[in-house]
Length: 569
View 1: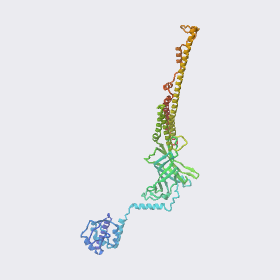
View 2: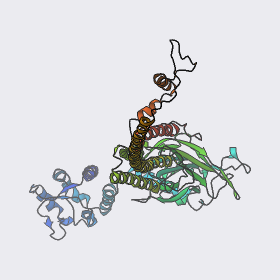
View 3: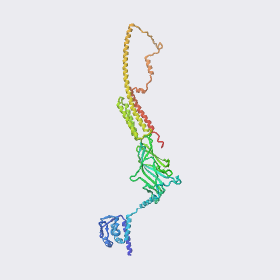
View 4: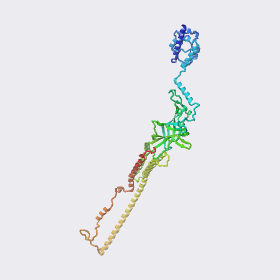
Protein backbone atom coordinates (compact mmCIF):
# COMPACT_ATOMS: atom_id res chain seq x y z
CA UNK A 1 0.00 0.00 0.00
CA UNK A 2 2.77 2.36 0.96
CA UNK A 3 4.83 1.40 -2.11
CA UNK A 4 1.96 2.13 -4.46
CA UNK A 5 1.44 5.48 -2.76
CA UNK A 6 5.11 6.43 -3.25
CA UNK A 7 5.00 5.34 -6.89
CA UNK A 8 1.97 7.47 -7.48
CA UNK A 9 3.73 10.39 -5.80
CA UNK A 10 6.81 9.94 -7.96
CA UNK A 11 4.69 9.78 -11.13
CA UNK A 12 2.89 13.00 -10.26
CA UNK A 13 6.16 14.65 -9.37
CA UNK A 14 7.65 13.70 -12.74
CA UNK A 15 4.61 15.03 -14.61
CA UNK A 16 4.64 18.30 -12.69
CA UNK A 17 8.37 18.73 -13.13
CA UNK A 18 8.22 17.96 -16.86
CA UNK A 19 5.31 20.35 -17.29
CA UNK A 20 7.13 23.14 -15.53
CA UNK A 21 10.39 22.60 -17.37
CA UNK A 22 8.80 22.61 -20.84
CA UNK A 23 7.25 26.00 -20.18
CA UNK A 24 8.98 29.23 -21.30
CA UNK A 25 12.44 29.65 -19.90
CA UNK A 26 11.70 32.11 -17.10
CA UNK A 27 13.11 30.74 -13.89
CA UNK A 28 13.49 32.41 -10.56
CA UNK A 29 16.13 32.26 -7.89
CA UNK A 30 15.47 33.10 -4.28
CA UNK A 31 17.30 33.23 -1.00
CA UNK A 32 16.15 30.25 1.00
CA UNK A 33 17.75 29.02 4.21
CA UNK A 34 19.68 26.67 4.23
CA UNK A 35 20.57 27.40 0.53
CA UNK A 36 24.02 28.91 0.28
CA UNK A 37 24.61 31.35 -2.60
CA UNK A 38 27.86 30.86 -4.51
CA UNK A 39 29.31 34.29 -5.29
CA UNK A 40 31.53 33.02 -8.09
CA UNK A 41 29.16 30.86 -10.12
CA UNK A 42 25.98 32.76 -9.21
CA UNK A 43 24.15 29.46 -8.77
CA UNK A 44 22.24 28.14 -5.82
CA UNK A 45 23.90 25.36 -3.92
CA UNK A 46 21.68 22.64 -2.54
CA UNK A 47 22.40 20.99 0.78
CA UNK A 48 23.49 17.42 0.67
CA UNK A 49 20.89 14.74 0.26
CA UNK A 50 21.31 13.79 3.91
CA UNK A 51 19.85 17.11 4.98
CA UNK A 52 16.79 17.01 2.77
CA UNK A 53 14.44 16.82 5.75
CA UNK A 54 15.90 20.02 7.14
CA UNK A 55 15.55 21.50 3.64
CA UNK A 56 11.85 20.65 3.56
CA UNK A 57 11.26 22.20 6.96
CA UNK A 58 12.85 25.46 5.94
CA UNK A 59 10.97 25.39 2.63
CA UNK A 60 7.67 25.37 4.44
CA UNK A 61 8.57 28.58 6.22
CA UNK A 62 7.90 30.50 2.95
CA UNK A 63 10.82 32.86 3.45
CA UNK A 64 11.08 33.81 -0.22
CA UNK A 65 12.36 36.94 -1.85
CA UNK A 66 10.82 37.51 -5.30
CA UNK A 67 13.03 40.42 -6.26
CA UNK A 68 15.87 38.52 -7.95
CA UNK A 69 15.12 36.91 -11.32
CA UNK A 70 17.25 35.18 -13.86
CA UNK A 71 16.78 33.52 -17.27
CA UNK A 72 17.43 29.85 -17.91
CA UNK A 73 20.99 28.96 -18.80
CA UNK A 74 22.29 25.59 -19.99
CA UNK A 75 25.14 25.83 -17.49
CA UNK A 76 22.60 25.46 -14.68
CA UNK A 77 22.21 21.84 -15.66
CA UNK A 78 25.89 21.03 -15.86
CA UNK A 79 26.16 19.69 -12.31
CA UNK A 80 22.67 18.39 -11.95
CA UNK A 81 23.89 14.79 -11.80
CA UNK A 82 25.79 15.53 -8.56
CA UNK A 83 22.78 17.25 -7.04
CA UNK A 84 25.03 20.03 -5.78
CA UNK A 85 23.54 22.87 -7.86
CA UNK A 86 19.97 23.42 -8.89
CA UNK A 87 18.06 26.27 -10.49
CA UNK A 88 14.84 26.87 -8.62
CA UNK A 89 11.67 26.85 -10.81
CA UNK A 90 8.91 29.43 -10.71
CA UNK A 91 7.81 30.02 -7.15
CA UNK A 92 4.30 28.64 -7.39
CA UNK A 93 5.50 25.39 -8.97
CA UNK A 94 8.50 25.31 -6.67
CA UNK A 95 6.32 25.26 -3.55
CA UNK A 96 4.41 22.27 -4.88
CA UNK A 97 7.29 20.22 -6.22
CA UNK A 98 10.10 20.74 -3.73
CA UNK A 99 8.74 18.34 -1.05
CA UNK A 100 9.27 15.50 -3.50
CA UNK A 101 12.43 16.65 -5.26
CA UNK A 102 14.88 15.40 -2.65
CA UNK A 103 13.39 11.90 -2.75
CA UNK A 104 13.32 11.94 -6.54
CA UNK A 105 16.96 13.01 -6.86
CA UNK A 106 18.11 10.20 -4.56
CA UNK A 107 18.13 7.84 -7.58
CA UNK A 108 21.09 8.72 -9.80
CA UNK A 109 19.60 6.95 -12.83
CA UNK A 110 16.46 9.03 -12.62
CA UNK A 111 18.59 12.13 -12.37
CA UNK A 112 20.48 11.20 -15.52
CA UNK A 113 17.26 10.43 -17.40
CA UNK A 114 15.83 13.78 -16.36
CA UNK A 115 18.95 15.53 -17.63
CA UNK A 116 18.62 13.82 -21.03
CA UNK A 117 14.93 14.73 -21.31
CA UNK A 118 15.51 18.35 -20.41
CA UNK A 119 18.43 18.67 -22.82
CA UNK A 120 16.46 17.15 -25.68
CA UNK A 121 13.33 19.23 -25.11
CA UNK A 122 14.85 22.62 -24.34
CA UNK A 123 18.19 22.60 -26.10
CA UNK A 124 17.53 20.61 -29.30
CA UNK A 125 14.07 21.48 -30.65
CA UNK A 126 13.34 19.93 -34.05
CA UNK A 127 11.53 21.94 -36.79
CA UNK A 128 9.68 20.08 -39.58
CA UNK A 129 11.60 21.98 -42.28
CA UNK A 130 14.87 20.55 -41.04
CA UNK A 131 13.88 17.16 -42.36
CA UNK A 132 13.06 18.64 -45.79
CA UNK A 133 16.39 20.47 -45.98
CA UNK A 134 18.21 17.29 -45.08
CA UNK A 135 16.25 15.42 -47.73
CA UNK A 136 17.13 18.04 -50.35
CA UNK A 137 20.78 17.69 -49.48
CA UNK A 138 20.62 13.92 -49.84
CA UNK A 139 18.86 14.27 -53.21
CA UNK A 140 21.44 16.74 -54.53
CA UNK A 141 24.29 14.55 -53.35
CA UNK A 142 22.72 11.63 -55.15
CA UNK A 143 21.75 13.19 -58.51
CA UNK A 144 24.93 15.23 -59.02
CA UNK A 145 27.26 12.84 -57.29
CA UNK A 146 29.97 10.70 -58.75
CA UNK A 147 27.57 9.09 -61.23
CA UNK A 148 26.74 12.39 -62.98
CA UNK A 149 29.07 13.82 -65.64
CA UNK A 150 28.38 17.45 -66.58
CA UNK A 151 30.44 17.05 -69.75
CA UNK A 152 27.89 14.72 -71.33
CA UNK A 153 24.75 16.24 -72.82
CA UNK A 154 21.40 14.78 -71.76
CA UNK A 155 19.39 12.38 -73.87
CA UNK A 156 17.55 14.09 -76.71
CA UNK A 157 14.04 13.84 -78.04
CA UNK A 158 13.60 10.54 -79.88
CA UNK A 159 10.73 11.99 -81.97
CA UNK A 160 13.20 14.21 -83.82
CA UNK A 161 16.00 11.70 -83.71
CA UNK A 162 18.72 12.02 -86.27
CA UNK A 163 21.13 9.37 -85.12
CA UNK A 164 19.00 6.36 -84.28
CA UNK A 165 16.66 6.88 -81.34
CA UNK A 166 18.67 9.61 -79.63
CA UNK A 167 17.74 12.97 -81.10
CA UNK A 168 19.13 16.39 -80.34
CA UNK A 169 18.65 17.94 -76.93
CA UNK A 170 15.91 20.56 -77.11
CA UNK A 171 16.57 23.82 -75.29
CA UNK A 172 13.74 26.34 -74.97
CA UNK A 173 14.84 29.97 -74.75
CA UNK A 174 13.20 33.19 -73.68
CA UNK A 175 14.66 36.55 -72.70
CA UNK A 176 13.60 39.56 -70.66
CA UNK A 177 14.90 42.90 -71.95
CA UNK A 178 15.53 44.98 -68.86
CA UNK A 179 17.02 48.11 -70.41
CA UNK A 180 18.53 49.53 -73.60
CA UNK A 181 20.88 52.26 -72.54
CA UNK A 182 22.58 53.46 -75.71
CA UNK A 183 22.18 53.21 -79.47
CA UNK A 184 25.27 54.60 -81.18
CA UNK A 185 25.00 55.67 -84.83
CA UNK A 186 28.72 56.37 -85.03
CA UNK A 187 29.85 52.92 -83.83
CA UNK A 188 26.73 51.13 -85.10
CA UNK A 189 26.13 49.33 -81.82
CA UNK A 190 23.73 49.32 -78.91
CA UNK A 191 23.88 48.34 -75.24
CA UNK A 192 21.27 46.07 -73.72
CA UNK A 193 20.77 44.36 -70.37
CA UNK A 194 18.79 41.11 -70.48
CA UNK A 195 17.75 38.25 -68.27
CA UNK A 196 18.49 35.17 -70.34
CA UNK A 197 16.63 31.91 -69.59
CA UNK A 198 17.08 28.38 -70.89
CA UNK A 199 14.97 25.31 -70.13
CA UNK A 200 15.75 21.70 -70.96
CA UNK A 201 15.17 18.20 -69.62
CA UNK A 202 17.97 16.10 -68.16
CA UNK A 203 16.58 12.69 -67.23
CA UNK A 204 19.62 12.01 -65.07
CA UNK A 205 18.41 14.65 -62.59
CA UNK A 206 15.01 13.10 -61.80
CA UNK A 207 14.11 12.73 -58.12
CA UNK A 208 11.18 11.99 -55.83
CA UNK A 209 9.31 15.13 -54.82
CA UNK A 210 8.21 13.66 -51.47
CA UNK A 211 4.50 13.76 -52.33
CA UNK A 212 4.67 17.36 -53.51
CA UNK A 213 6.67 18.68 -50.59
CA UNK A 214 9.66 19.53 -52.84
CA UNK A 215 8.69 21.65 -55.83
CA UNK A 216 12.23 22.12 -57.08
CA UNK A 217 15.83 22.16 -55.96
CA UNK A 218 18.03 25.24 -56.20
CA UNK A 219 21.64 24.73 -57.21
CA UNK A 220 23.99 27.57 -56.34
CA UNK A 221 26.83 26.27 -58.51
CA UNK A 222 25.53 25.84 -62.07
CA UNK A 223 28.83 24.34 -63.21
CA UNK A 224 27.90 21.04 -61.60
CA UNK A 225 25.30 20.25 -64.27
CA UNK A 226 25.41 20.23 -68.06
CA UNK A 227 24.53 23.53 -69.76
CA UNK A 228 24.15 24.46 -73.46
CA UNK A 229 27.17 26.13 -75.06
CA UNK A 230 25.26 29.18 -76.25
CA UNK A 231 27.00 32.39 -77.34
CA UNK A 232 25.88 35.72 -78.83
CA UNK A 233 26.95 36.00 -82.46
CA UNK A 234 26.87 39.81 -82.75
CA UNK A 235 28.39 40.53 -79.34
CA UNK A 236 31.15 43.13 -79.04
CA UNK A 237 31.43 43.28 -75.25
CA UNK A 238 29.64 41.68 -72.34
CA UNK A 239 29.83 40.95 -68.63
CA UNK A 240 27.96 39.10 -65.91
CA UNK A 241 26.58 40.73 -62.78
CA UNK A 242 28.11 39.64 -59.46
CA UNK A 243 26.83 42.30 -57.04
CA UNK A 244 26.14 41.32 -54.29
CA UNK A 245 26.06 37.69 -55.34
CA UNK A 246 26.30 36.24 -58.86
CA UNK A 247 22.96 36.85 -60.59
CA UNK A 248 22.55 33.22 -61.60
CA UNK A 249 19.65 30.87 -60.96
CA UNK A 250 19.49 27.13 -61.61
CA UNK A 251 16.46 25.06 -60.62
CA UNK A 252 16.05 21.31 -60.92
CA UNK A 253 12.49 19.97 -61.07
CA UNK A 254 11.39 16.46 -60.03
CA UNK A 255 10.81 15.30 -63.61
CA UNK A 256 14.36 16.28 -64.58
CA UNK A 257 13.56 19.73 -65.96
CA UNK A 258 16.25 22.38 -65.57
CA UNK A 259 15.73 26.14 -65.55
CA UNK A 260 18.85 28.26 -66.03
CA UNK A 261 18.56 32.04 -65.70
CA UNK A 262 21.30 34.66 -65.72
CA UNK A 263 21.46 38.47 -65.96
CA UNK A 264 23.99 39.84 -68.43
CA UNK A 265 24.88 43.17 -70.05
CA UNK A 266 25.88 43.17 -73.71
CA UNK A 267 27.17 45.57 -76.33
CA UNK A 268 25.87 44.22 -79.64
CA UNK A 269 26.68 45.20 -83.21
CA UNK A 270 23.83 46.77 -85.16
CA UNK A 271 24.54 47.45 -88.87
CA UNK A 272 22.46 50.49 -89.75
CA UNK A 273 21.13 51.88 -93.01
CA UNK A 274 21.34 55.66 -92.60
CA UNK A 275 19.92 56.57 -95.99
CA UNK A 276 16.85 58.17 -94.40
CA UNK A 277 18.61 59.55 -91.31
CA UNK A 278 17.13 61.13 -89.18
CA UNK A 279 13.75 60.03 -90.53
CA UNK A 280 14.75 56.39 -90.40
CA UNK A 281 13.92 53.13 -88.68
CA UNK A 282 16.61 50.69 -87.65
CA UNK A 283 16.56 46.94 -87.06
CA UNK A 284 18.91 45.72 -84.34
CA UNK A 285 19.03 42.03 -83.57
CA UNK A 286 20.12 39.70 -80.78
CA UNK A 287 21.55 36.50 -82.27
CA UNK A 288 22.18 33.41 -80.14
CA UNK A 289 23.73 30.21 -81.44
CA UNK A 290 25.44 27.03 -80.32
CA UNK A 291 29.20 27.20 -80.49
CA UNK A 292 30.20 23.53 -80.49
CA UNK A 293 27.07 21.35 -80.74
CA UNK A 294 25.62 20.94 -84.22
CA UNK A 295 21.92 20.56 -84.95
CA UNK A 296 22.36 16.79 -84.60
CA UNK A 297 23.17 17.24 -80.91
CA UNK A 298 21.51 20.46 -79.80
CA UNK A 299 18.65 22.62 -81.04
CA UNK A 300 17.46 25.95 -79.68
CA UNK A 301 13.74 26.67 -79.79
CA UNK A 302 11.85 29.81 -78.85
CA UNK A 303 9.50 29.34 -75.94
CA UNK A 304 5.91 29.31 -77.15
CA UNK A 305 4.55 31.73 -74.56
CA UNK A 306 6.26 35.12 -74.27
CA UNK A 307 9.56 34.30 -75.97
CA UNK A 308 10.59 37.94 -75.54
CA UNK A 309 9.52 40.04 -72.58
CA UNK A 310 10.14 43.77 -72.31
CA UNK A 311 10.06 45.71 -69.08
CA UNK A 312 7.18 48.15 -68.88
CA UNK A 313 9.26 51.23 -68.01
CA UNK A 314 11.67 50.90 -70.92
CA UNK A 315 12.83 54.33 -72.17
CA UNK A 316 15.32 54.77 -74.98
CA UNK A 317 17.31 57.91 -75.79
CA UNK A 318 16.14 59.35 -79.13
CA UNK A 319 14.45 56.08 -80.13
CA UNK A 320 11.17 54.23 -79.68
CA UNK A 321 10.91 50.45 -79.70
CA UNK A 322 7.96 49.82 -82.01
CA UNK A 323 7.92 46.02 -82.12
CA UNK A 324 10.04 42.88 -82.20
CA UNK A 325 10.12 39.73 -84.30
CA UNK A 326 11.52 36.32 -83.35
CA UNK A 327 13.09 34.12 -85.97
CA UNK A 328 15.60 31.33 -86.57
CA UNK A 329 19.02 31.88 -88.12
CA UNK A 330 20.57 28.42 -88.39
CA UNK A 331 23.99 28.81 -89.95
CA UNK A 332 26.10 26.36 -91.93
CA UNK A 333 29.87 26.33 -91.78
CA UNK A 334 32.65 23.94 -92.73
CA UNK A 335 32.27 22.15 -89.40
CA UNK A 336 28.51 21.63 -89.61
CA UNK A 337 25.13 23.26 -89.16
CA UNK A 338 24.50 25.12 -85.91
CA UNK A 339 21.21 26.06 -84.34
CA UNK A 340 20.63 29.79 -84.01
CA UNK A 341 17.91 32.09 -82.68
CA UNK A 342 17.46 35.80 -83.23
CA UNK A 343 15.10 38.54 -82.20
CA UNK A 344 14.83 41.65 -84.37
CA UNK A 345 14.09 44.89 -82.54
CA UNK A 346 12.55 47.65 -84.66
CA UNK A 347 13.60 51.09 -83.45
CA UNK A 348 12.02 54.29 -84.75
CA UNK A 349 14.07 57.44 -84.34
CA UNK A 350 12.45 60.27 -82.42
CA UNK A 351 12.27 63.10 -84.96
CA UNK A 352 11.38 65.89 -82.52
CA UNK A 353 14.96 66.04 -81.22
CA UNK A 354 16.40 66.51 -84.70
CA UNK A 355 13.68 68.97 -85.66
CA UNK A 356 14.71 71.24 -82.81
CA UNK A 357 18.45 70.67 -83.04
CA UNK A 358 19.01 70.60 -86.81
CA UNK A 359 16.09 71.49 -89.07
CA UNK A 360 14.77 74.63 -87.38
CA UNK A 361 18.25 76.18 -86.87
CA UNK A 362 19.10 75.54 -90.51
CA UNK A 363 15.86 77.20 -91.63
CA UNK A 364 16.61 80.19 -89.44
CA UNK A 365 20.09 80.57 -90.92
CA UNK A 366 18.69 80.47 -94.43
CA UNK A 367 16.06 83.09 -93.61
CA UNK A 368 18.65 85.32 -91.92
CA UNK A 369 20.76 85.19 -95.07
CA UNK A 370 17.82 86.71 -96.98
CA UNK A 371 17.97 89.88 -94.87
CA UNK A 372 20.72 91.18 -97.13
CA UNK A 373 18.17 91.48 -99.96
CA UNK A 374 16.53 94.36 -98.06
CA UNK A 375 19.76 96.18 -97.31
CA UNK A 376 21.07 99.00 -99.46
CA UNK A 377 23.39 97.78 -102.20
CA UNK A 378 25.93 100.34 -101.08
CA UNK A 379 25.98 98.89 -97.49
CA UNK A 380 28.85 96.64 -98.44
CA UNK A 381 30.26 95.87 -94.94
CA UNK A 382 26.86 94.92 -93.51
CA UNK A 383 25.90 92.65 -96.39
CA UNK A 384 29.31 90.98 -96.56
CA UNK A 385 29.50 90.30 -92.82
CA UNK A 386 25.95 88.93 -92.78
CA UNK A 387 26.58 86.58 -95.68
CA UNK A 388 29.93 85.33 -94.43
CA UNK A 389 28.65 84.81 -90.87
CA UNK A 390 25.65 82.75 -91.94
CA UNK A 391 27.82 80.73 -94.30
CA UNK A 392 30.37 79.90 -91.62
CA UNK A 393 27.66 79.08 -89.08
CA UNK A 394 26.01 76.75 -91.54
CA UNK A 395 29.30 75.03 -92.29
CA UNK A 396 29.99 74.59 -88.58
CA UNK A 397 26.55 73.05 -88.05
CA UNK A 398 27.12 70.58 -90.87
CA UNK A 399 30.48 69.63 -89.40
CA UNK A 400 28.90 68.96 -85.99
CA UNK A 401 26.16 66.84 -87.54
CA UNK A 402 28.61 64.71 -89.51
CA UNK A 403 30.86 64.20 -86.48
CA UNK A 404 28.17 62.05 -84.84
CA UNK A 405 27.67 59.88 -87.93
CA UNK A 406 29.88 57.31 -89.59
CA UNK A 407 31.33 58.07 -93.01
CA UNK A 408 29.18 56.19 -95.50
CA UNK A 409 29.31 55.94 -99.27
CA UNK A 410 25.69 57.00 -99.87
CA UNK A 411 23.85 60.28 -99.40
CA UNK A 412 21.74 60.60 -96.30
CA UNK A 413 18.54 62.59 -95.90
CA UNK A 414 20.29 64.96 -93.54
CA UNK A 415 23.00 65.51 -96.17
CA UNK A 416 20.38 66.61 -98.68
CA UNK A 417 18.86 69.04 -96.20
CA UNK A 418 22.09 70.60 -95.00
CA UNK A 419 23.52 70.71 -98.52
CA UNK A 420 20.53 72.59 -99.92
CA UNK A 421 20.46 74.97 -96.95
CA UNK A 422 24.15 75.67 -97.43
CA UNK A 423 23.48 76.29 -101.12
CA UNK A 424 20.80 78.86 -100.31
CA UNK A 425 23.08 80.66 -97.86
CA UNK A 426 25.91 80.64 -100.37
CA UNK A 427 23.49 81.81 -103.06
CA UNK A 428 22.53 84.80 -100.93
CA UNK A 429 26.20 85.70 -100.65
CA UNK A 430 26.67 85.35 -104.41
CA UNK A 431 23.58 87.47 -104.96
CA UNK A 432 25.24 90.32 -103.12
CA UNK A 433 28.29 89.96 -105.34
CA UNK A 434 26.02 90.22 -108.38
CA UNK A 435 24.19 93.19 -106.91
CA UNK A 436 27.47 94.93 -106.15
CA UNK A 437 28.65 94.37 -109.71
CA UNK A 438 25.35 95.62 -111.11
CA UNK A 439 25.47 98.66 -108.85
CA UNK A 440 28.94 99.60 -110.04
CA UNK A 441 27.89 98.92 -113.61
CA UNK A 442 24.85 101.15 -113.19
CA UNK A 443 27.01 103.92 -111.80
CA UNK A 444 29.43 103.57 -114.68
CA UNK A 445 26.62 103.60 -117.22
CA UNK A 446 25.07 106.64 -115.56
CA UNK A 447 28.38 108.49 -115.69
CA UNK A 448 28.85 107.47 -119.30
CA UNK A 449 25.34 108.58 -120.14
CA UNK A 450 25.93 111.95 -118.52
CA UNK A 451 29.12 112.33 -120.50
CA UNK A 452 27.33 111.40 -123.71
CA UNK A 453 24.54 113.82 -122.89
CA UNK A 454 27.05 116.60 -122.34
CA UNK A 455 28.74 115.78 -125.64
CA UNK A 456 25.39 115.68 -127.39
CA UNK A 457 24.43 119.03 -125.95
CA UNK A 458 27.75 120.50 -127.04
CA UNK A 459 27.35 119.06 -130.52
CA UNK A 460 23.80 120.37 -130.75
CA UNK A 461 24.94 123.81 -129.74
CA UNK A 462 27.70 123.67 -132.31
CA UNK A 463 25.27 122.60 -135.03
CA UNK A 464 22.77 125.27 -134.12
CA UNK A 465 25.51 127.90 -134.13
CA UNK A 466 26.78 126.67 -137.50
CA UNK A 467 23.25 126.65 -138.94
CA UNK A 468 22.67 130.20 -137.78
CA UNK A 469 25.82 131.34 -139.48
CA UNK A 470 24.81 129.52 -142.68
CA UNK A 471 21.38 131.12 -142.69
CA UNK A 472 22.87 134.57 -142.33
CA UNK A 473 25.16 133.88 -145.24
CA UNK A 474 22.29 132.66 -147.46
CA UNK A 475 20.17 135.67 -146.61
CA UNK A 476 22.93 137.92 -147.77
CA UNK A 477 23.21 136.09 -151.09
CA UNK A 478 19.43 136.03 -151.68
CA UNK A 479 19.21 139.71 -151.18
CA UNK A 480 21.91 140.18 -153.75
CA UNK A 481 20.48 138.03 -156.56
CA UNK A 482 16.67 138.02 -155.72
CA UNK A 483 16.07 134.57 -157.20
CA UNK A 484 13.03 132.22 -156.44
CA UNK A 485 13.17 128.47 -156.56
CA UNK A 486 10.85 126.53 -158.86
CA UNK A 487 8.40 124.56 -156.71
CA UNK A 488 5.49 122.39 -158.00
CA UNK A 489 2.24 123.69 -156.71
CA UNK A 490 0.02 121.07 -155.21
CA UNK A 491 -3.73 121.62 -155.05
CA UNK A 492 -5.77 119.57 -152.71
CA UNK A 493 -9.35 118.65 -153.25
CA UNK A 494 -12.05 117.23 -151.05
CA UNK A 495 -11.22 113.56 -151.67
CA UNK A 496 -7.46 113.44 -151.49
CA UNK A 497 -4.33 114.35 -153.36
CA UNK A 498 -4.73 115.19 -156.97
CA UNK A 499 -1.39 113.78 -157.79
CA UNK A 500 -2.49 110.26 -156.47
CA UNK A 501 0.10 110.27 -153.69
CA UNK A 502 -0.88 109.19 -150.13
CA UNK A 503 -1.15 111.76 -147.44
CA UNK A 504 1.64 111.23 -144.91
CA UNK A 505 0.58 113.81 -142.42
CA UNK A 506 2.16 113.87 -138.96
CA UNK A 507 -0.94 112.93 -136.98
CA UNK A 508 -1.67 109.84 -139.11
CA UNK A 509 1.92 108.69 -138.87
CA UNK A 510 1.87 108.98 -135.06
CA UNK A 511 -1.38 107.03 -134.82
CA UNK A 512 0.07 104.32 -137.02
CA UNK A 513 3.17 104.06 -134.91
CA UNK A 514 1.17 103.69 -131.70
CA UNK A 515 -0.96 100.95 -133.23
CA UNK A 516 1.97 98.88 -134.48
CA UNK A 517 4.19 98.98 -131.31
CA UNK A 518 3.82 95.70 -129.14
CA UNK A 519 2.50 95.87 -125.60
CA UNK A 520 4.93 95.50 -122.71
CA UNK A 521 4.21 92.52 -120.30
CA UNK A 522 3.35 93.13 -116.65
CA UNK A 523 6.74 91.89 -115.41
CA UNK A 524 8.66 94.42 -117.46
CA UNK A 525 6.24 97.14 -116.50
CA UNK A 526 6.71 96.22 -112.83
CA UNK A 527 10.50 96.09 -113.13
CA UNK A 528 10.52 99.37 -114.95
CA UNK A 529 9.59 100.96 -111.64
CA UNK A 530 13.12 100.24 -110.42
CA UNK A 531 15.55 102.26 -112.48
CA UNK A 532 18.77 100.38 -111.60
CA UNK A 533 19.67 96.77 -112.33
CA UNK A 534 21.02 96.21 -108.79
CA UNK A 535 17.67 97.13 -107.34
CA UNK A 536 15.91 94.86 -109.78
CA UNK A 537 18.15 91.92 -108.76
CA UNK A 538 17.39 92.48 -105.07
CA UNK A 539 13.66 92.64 -105.73
CA UNK A 540 13.75 89.44 -107.78
CA UNK A 541 15.79 87.67 -105.08
CA UNK A 542 13.27 88.61 -102.40
CA UNK A 543 10.70 86.52 -104.24
CA UNK A 544 12.83 83.87 -105.92
CA UNK A 545 14.77 82.59 -102.88
CA UNK A 546 11.77 82.02 -100.53
CA UNK A 547 9.75 80.49 -103.35
CA UNK A 548 12.47 78.02 -104.25
CA UNK A 549 13.10 77.14 -100.60
CA UNK A 550 9.40 76.46 -100.07
CA UNK A 551 9.36 74.26 -103.18
CA UNK A 552 12.39 72.36 -101.89
CA UNK A 553 10.67 71.76 -98.54
CA UNK A 554 7.61 70.42 -100.29
CA UNK A 555 9.64 67.94 -102.32
CA UNK A 556 11.89 66.99 -99.38
CA UNK A 557 9.18 66.23 -96.84
CA UNK A 558 7.04 64.47 -99.42
CA UNK A 559 9.94 62.21 -100.35
CA UNK A 560 11.24 61.33 -96.89
CA UNK A 561 8.32 61.78 -94.54
CA UNK A 562 5.52 60.13 -96.47
CA UNK A 563 7.46 57.27 -97.94
CA UNK A 564 6.44 53.65 -97.38
CA UNK A 565 7.66 51.88 -94.28
CA UNK A 566 10.60 49.54 -94.43
CA UNK A 567 9.69 46.74 -96.80
CA UNK A 568 11.86 44.10 -95.21
CA UNK A 569 9.66 43.90 -92.11
